[in-house]
Image 1 (cartoon, rainbow, N blue to C red):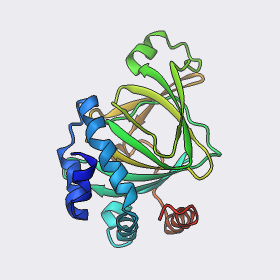
Image 2: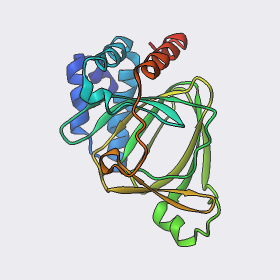
Image 3: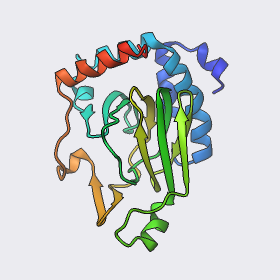
Image 4: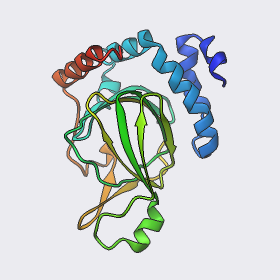
Length: 219
């Protein structure tokens, strides 16, 4: 739906657009998610309400995480597992090339994020020798920039201080994703598999992130 048409929607109808996204088609997802995330980012009252709702919705709050690379707020999840998330990047952490278990679209709403793209994880794995792979493309995404990737895309990112993004991610496309670092490939599972250390966000983490968003004018 075009940006102008999205502006006419109620908050509830705007969020419901996620159910219409074509997660398996990269070009369609890009065309659908960009205007959606732009409009959502402009509705600060809605972002505030969705963040406030996490205190009362224990199911959503359990999906929020404090990871080495970011604060990850899960604002919404539909019946297919598609989610809307808000990320606050932690600049002290250096990422490694990795894929995801789903397609996603990310819109930078504050700060800047450096992204590196390595192509398909399948192609990288064919030549991987235990050393960090070389990126095919490196971009610095300023506020207002946007990218879309599928589950097989290998990428890396580093957020500058104060960087925030809005993300929509699709339903699971596979059970395991991969990290390609120095020395070997690390398999990444979902929290449901109980094979990784839990990273659940605590109440103080939640408040710390909100305070940062307020200080940067995101809310």
